[in-house]
Structure formats: C-alpha cells, structure tokens
Length: 382
Image (cartoon, rainbow, N blue to C red; front, side, top):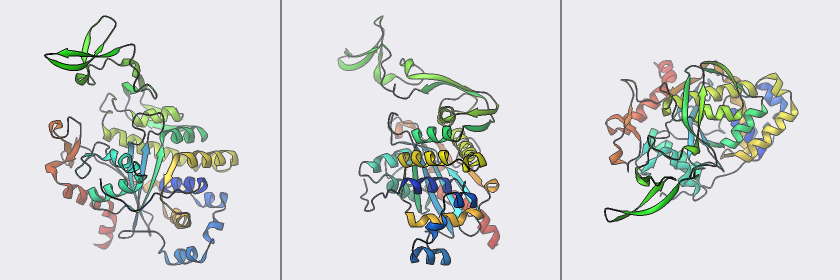
C-alpha cells in the first residue's frame, strides 16, 4: 500500500452541511442569507483576497473536481466500502457541472482490488479520502481537489428530515435478495460444520435434515441463508420515498428488468441526489430553523471531508453560476457498442466480478472521461 503523508481533516458540523449541499449544487443565495454566510466571507484578509482574485479553490483547467462517496457505515457489511462513487466537476467561471458515476466494481491494478475498496484501505491509516482521491486521479488522469464521504445512516436521517423525496421511477423492478442490515452473518437456523470430503477437511452448511452444501460453493443461485434478505419492489411512476425506501432504491443490486447492474444503480443514485437537492431548496425546508439545525447535526455525525472552513465562501461564490437543470450526467456502462468497459474474466481476478476497460486500456478510459468533462470548453475554444 502506498504511503500517504496528508491526514484527513475534519470540519465542524456547520461546515459539513454546507459542503455537502454545495457539491450537490443545492445552495442558493437564500441559503447564504439563511445561514448568515456573509460573515464567513469576511473572516480574514486571506479569504477576502481569494474571493477577489478567484485564486482560493484548487482547479484543473478551470474546473474544481470533488469526489462524493457513500458508505454503509456502522451496522452494515463492509462499513467503509464505497457503495456510491460520484465525481463532480464544476467549471469555476460558467458553473457547468458534470456528474460522473463510477461503477464500484471497476478494477484498479495498483490496488489489486475494486475501486470501492480504496476508501476502506485508506481508512486503515485514517487516510481514506486521500487514497480514494489518488485512485480516481490515477484511473482518469484527473486531479481530485476535494472529497466528501457520507454514510447511509446519515442519508436516511437527512431524507426523513426534509419530509421524504418525490422520485419518478422510470423502470419497475423487484429485488428478491436485498440484504437486511445487521443480519449479514445470520445462520438462518443452519449450522456450519467441518467435514472430511475426499480426504480434505472442508466447511459445509447443514440444515435440520442433515443435507449439506460446501460453504465455498455457495453463490447467488444456491444461497441457503435466505433470512439475510428481503424482497423489495418498485412500480413505475411517481413515488414518495422516506429515507429507508430511498436507500433501498439506490442500493438494490439484484433488481429485475436490467436494474441489477452498477450502471442502473448509478442512474438511480443521481436521480435521488437531484431530488434531495430540490427538497433542500424548497421554501418549507429553508424557512424551518428546526429542520436546518437537525440537518446540520445529522451531517456533522455522518460526513467526513477534507474541505477547509476557509474554502466554504469560495464554494458559495460558485452557487449563483450553477443551473441545476443543465447538470450533465455521465454513467459508465458495458451494454452499448460504444461502451469502454467490459466484464473481466473472474479467473484473473480471484473469482470476483469486476469491470475493466475494453482492451485493457485505462488510457482510453481516461481520455473518454476527460473528453466528456471538457466537451463544452473544447467547443468554446474551437
């Protein structure tokens, strides 16, 4: 594992809610006034100079790149694995925003693991955000200037605090194997025993009748631990979702009607993010001090970020330039002729389901992502 020298810095709860909503492009001048952020703007000479010169935020070719991670958190299987990975690129002058949803199963050669492991590996040294940023930079040849991580417990509470989300479901689906939090290791009244088979001592799963199944041969098709899962269902059309339902909507991995892929999940995640920002911007939320205070407390407990307090006014300065209706969304997939990703051979990746660039070229993948992000700038300069 590479050695990293930068420690993760944690901001105050007040700053964290502002950072999170800025990344989702949800703040407006009304929010600035509500939170009295004008006071932050004049907190010191350096901030004033940065505001005047536009030199305070890190940029690459005029764009600020922010990584948004969603993790399970305490009580979930793999609490530090990134279930949601989105790169937000914001053009400093025009306010153009590109959201790039990155499949969690994308293979990273330098880690010898999927990209969703980067934050978890880094957290072993309290450097999760830094390793995640470095990994994205390595894969896409793009610097990632800032990062925010939100755990699902905070997501559920935040959605409930704003009164739920109105989501338009484009494709109906069912998921018969949605994992129940806290039951990841439930044996479901079965037993795991060691048994000698062909002269080799192996672990087997046995039921009350004595029928057995090799533990290492269990897969999605023959999994006997059925009590670990529940069936969820979503019908096409408009639906009001509370926090728990919205989380199931974005996390489902075994949905019917082609909704079980990372690409379908990424599209649903972006849909929920935009619905959340719309709800936060609603007058009912903005003018309710109790809700705002509770949101601040919720994100204070559930968000990590490396954005310093002094950078907040500079992010705020970007807000009036952003038109949420023109946000460009990009989801990497494998099911189109033009797709740059394909399924890797499990035998080459320890039996895991992974995604790799077609032809194994990460350079082509990086050029594609950069081309999409800088598309408008290239047209402008042509």
